[in-house]
Image (tube, rainbow, N blue to C red; front, side):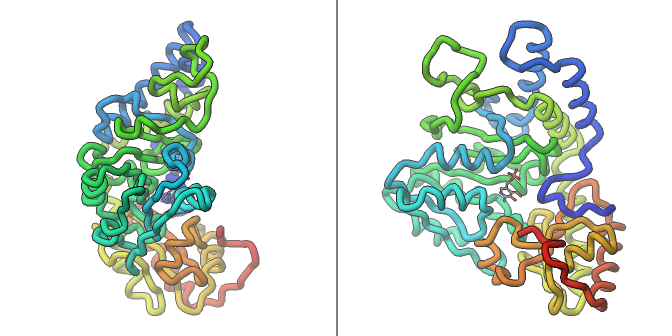
Length: 391
Ligand SMILES: Cc1ncc(COP(=O)(O)O)c(C=O)c1O
């Protein structure tokens, strides 16, 4: 099989990830941070190692500010719902994932939301964002890169603007963690949400929220057992326990640590270089297919390794289904949990097919996929309701 659905979750994972998870189950299978016995301490050590590895990767000076979550959605819910109060104004963009738009939507008339319209390539205009900041603006929530077009947002520039205005900056790094350099200090990020299971190469069920000092007022999303300060009635105010109630996914976190180590060993530059080559080869080849339309920036440098497209006259869901069943190519067709992004691109009705690449994809796979698309363009593809598309 050719796996081009890495923006949903990366696959395969480096073998070390599986080894680390097995090791955790066999040698450190107790509850981390709960008991004083050797097995529990060993589990706690594995969790702390991953915390430190992530802190190092993103230039986070205090590893206790790295909070483990279930996924990026969980981290974004914690960040957004934990900072807003009635009467607040939040600024976001028209390219956001439902993990941002739905928590904001659920707050209804309690808050005001401004969605800055992005251009047809999915790029935000920083001046528009600057003009939208008001006295009651609490935060700016922006994706680092779109999961539909891969468009990379000018995060550093936005971070400076938001910091100067004295607001909170929340970044959704679902498509960039482990793919692009992220430095919370340089980018002036206050709350950073990352999935553990995409670019960071960990297993599903892992995610991270970085909580910066300026976001110290963030309310905990869930409360309960932390293994510390058990006699205290309220949620402890110490990090990371304040935001980590309940038993952690130690096995997953151990795997995530091995994923982050793999990235550091391989080097972000090398990973980015390879993924750019795949993206460039696909864009160059696909642009020559008559009737195939690619959305987003024309060059690979301006995007994460994500390319969405349609073929005129072909049903998107049917295309996704045929790629899977006829050619064994796994991709994602539909709205990609980002209806606003599709409205921005004008593809809400047609939807798009998305290819997303990882370090483990090969250039030969891109060549083969291009051959399949040329072939598909000439064929009748039956539309089967409910197949090929996840909307
Ligand atoms: C931009 C963006 N934000 C958030 C998410 C949610 O990530 P998760 O699947 O880890 O909850 C995704 C998932 O694809 C995404 O692409």
